[in-house]
Length: 109
Image (cartoon, rainbow, N blue to C red; front, side, top):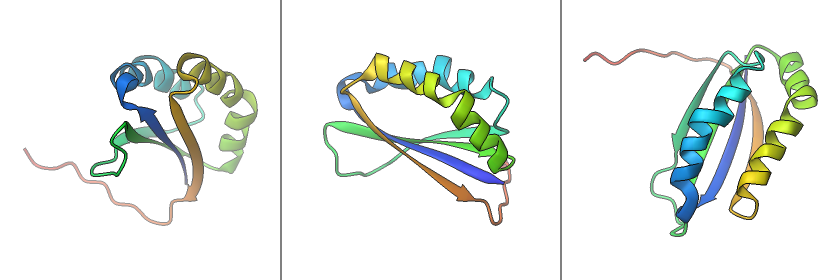
């Protein structure tokens, strides 16, 4: 398994709009490509940027072939839409990691 991680630093004055847009529009569009198995969106706590928030969106993908196909066929347009909406208000970088081991449990109520 491969983990495709997108880290975004987003200006504080628009971050609530960005989070909503990511949850309602962008992430569903990414997932509708059927290249990813699941995703997780997280917010960094206790960072040093007083004027921004930092988020990661981690997409789990079956293998590199699926990630390469996503990057070739889908990512350019999806990233263009993101830039068009938030140009000058964010910085993003992407990393790719191999999942070596994992264990997920649902916490008891």
